[in-house]
Length: 184
Image (tube, rainbow, N blue to C red):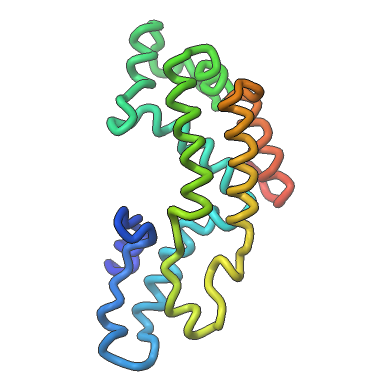
């Protein structure tokens, strides 16, 4: 179980999930532990290969503006504007705030620009065992990831050109996910 949970971590060097394939090297057949790790890791990031990926990217973009790695621009914005916890209570309100603040918008545009590359080339599922057993990997079974990268690239270009706002992109991501079914 620990190996499966650790497998969900993104490895920044390999650009894939953090699986331990050492037990496979000891045998010619695919060990069950490898399949278990791949299934847990794949399930963790399966939304990348579904029509929900752009909506998840938007959610993560909104959250990331509070991270240290992004300079905690959300917190700085809140302090500058006297915003208290609970003042911005919906994603729509947060994306509207992003659109109104040049610094937030700049960071948001940079994050979204990176999502297309992440979806297209900077990430790969660790699914060698599944490929060996099934003849197909996760991207073969759930082939939406490249279409999601295309969707993000088109929106990112419009966003960078000032022809699309963060709030509009949020609405479009919602509509795109809704076409797949389920509740966003």
